Image (cartoon, rainbow, N blue to C red; front, side):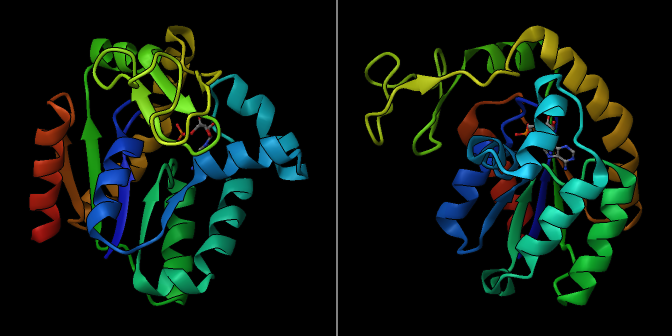
Length: 214
Ligand code: AMP
């Protein structure tokens, strides 16, 4: 399957991606994770992306497009892909169409996760992430067994620098301004399935499984 998962910050793209991957043997390609890794490594891309990301703004199209182009050339993408957080603008969507046509793996399904603002604010401010293995927790809805420690690898949990209500507002503005045209583009092609992501995790995933089965 060649799948995109889209939705604003805190809509559960990362959590749902983890669940999808339990059932589908395809690579998970998250531009947010790739950019955070680039920052951690201190690479030239990371240095360029850091200011935008810290302000909750979108990284320029050319940077993320070349990142995704390079990633999709890898052999594992011949099995398909689950792309998380890309495209986030119309130029990115058009570039993705060219790239996926070249590798003969056009997008088949766009999962659009929708959530209201208050639920997003609660999710984002309570989210905790393991710096070491990337596991995601939430202080209320999915707490780790030991406060502040990852259940999977025992490393300390951290909060993302942009997981604050202020940054959320900026990220949501950016999201709706830039991502809406891109969603419209896929809607016209009949590829979008809207998923009510305000529901409990298991129900959200049940709706996603239905969409995948079709
Ligand atoms: P995410 O982890 O998907 O919420 O992404 C975190 C941040 O990385 C975003 O707020 C942007 O600054 C940047 N980012 C991730 N994907 C993209 C993209 N496709 N286009 C532009 N910026 C991106």
